[in-house]
Image (cartoon, rainbow over all chains, first blue to last red; front, side, top):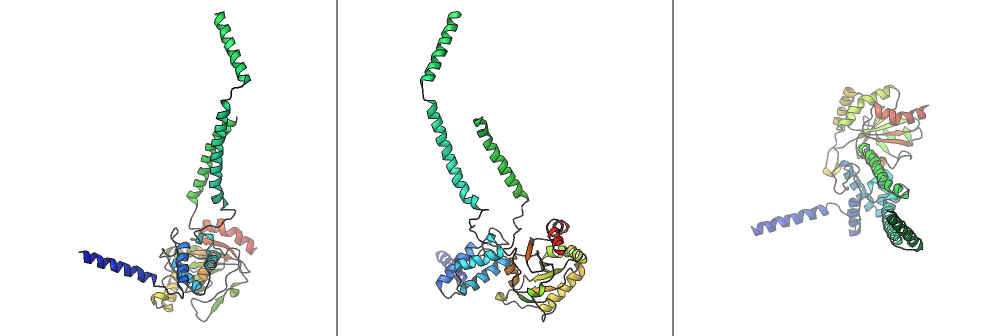
Length: 154
Length: 190
């Protein structure tokens, strides 16, 4: 039984290796670029899958295109630009900073700043209330006098 | 006074979220715009579907406003829109088909049978209506990739100078034509 499990695991190992070797690249760097790109580029058809993961026809076409471009010696950024030219920013999982997307970066910072600002503001106000100055003293004395007068009149 | 205003803040956030999420209900995430919008048609040289000797290029399509409709007989929505597109043709809209062959993949040693495809297309168009001036065969889907096509049906509105003005994902029907295409098309053809 143990041996059977071992054999099964060996086959699993072979299978994954075979998948890695399906594409041939001149250098290991290019193979690495290909792997990174297919995980970063998004399939336009099966949304929320990258092109390595998707079985859609267009994902296969994009993978083939990435292979061709990488084998031509194009850099990672070149390939990303090539795809964005055709499929728009949607095709890359990392959105660029543009006027439309700036809110993604700015909003969290704004919320944190506002939150802390609010806490500080409240604490300062609470601390201020505990001050006891001459006007408060005078007002208190007045109130006590008024009360005592009322008591006497009764 | 200040306190009252502050109390409004959660309410305003709530309203903002409602509007944002309400829009999301009716948005279509599949409605993708090609990165080519506003640019000219990419260069290509592809054969006519019915006549392999005839080659179409980006330049040979220039001179008239046209719709480029990406379709295939394997795609049910494409078949469904043939009827309406034929109506548009009868109204004088120039429609060029870009035949998107899905099944063919040379990596798997597929043999491509052009005659079977021609017969298939001819019978389909005679049954469902033929809106096309002609069809361009994009067997390797290279023009489709250059146009940022992710499937079928998709339609591009191209002006006289070959500039891509509109990209629509999904079928074209009366509603889509009126709201999306007609305003731009009428302006172009006046």
